[in-house]
Length: 278
Image (cartoon, rainbow, N blue to C red):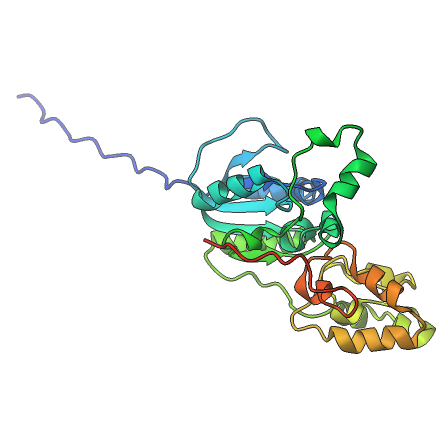
């Protein structure tokens, strides 16, 4: 008597892994290199996600949609404006990484002058260069789900942001000032002890207070902290002997287009750009 045929048990399919994309706009690539420098942690992360687009790491690309997009760099051309809207449309979550993406970067110094003068001074044939008059953060043009500050970003903070968004929770990133990091590592305040001008009281934590640990004032690499009291710090900088030009100069660096730094006394009202978020 023939044996009855058994029905094969269906093989369970593995759920699709989240897709990660990393995009570059006007920048030095330093924040993307921070991700690559994570090395062992990056290998573990690669086992949990599909890196679908990351030209700094691989020429192999996969079309969207993407669960998480990391965007480095500022918007400086008409092509950038078009492309960032395309990235936003293809991304469930979009996180900007670094000073260029969150505050326009060092290239936002053009916002305070005539970009034509810069082109004429730098390029032999400026007519061939197509650029906007300003360099603006990504958030000026599209909706951003989270901004990770720094020049460059902190690798531990970057891994926390990626893990948080893949787990659908809010990133656990401190909003305190660099001064708290000085306290944690036992660094004596350079302003109080030595009269050294320092942006630590208004700068976002994340660097580990490296400069004050070596008896130098904070340069503001991580941009303004949450609710910075910039006018109070400027008064103290003047007490320490800084004139108006020097006060302007210390705020016109990596995060010059961040409103709290851009609108510091002597900075003017900024570029006049209006938001065009989708």
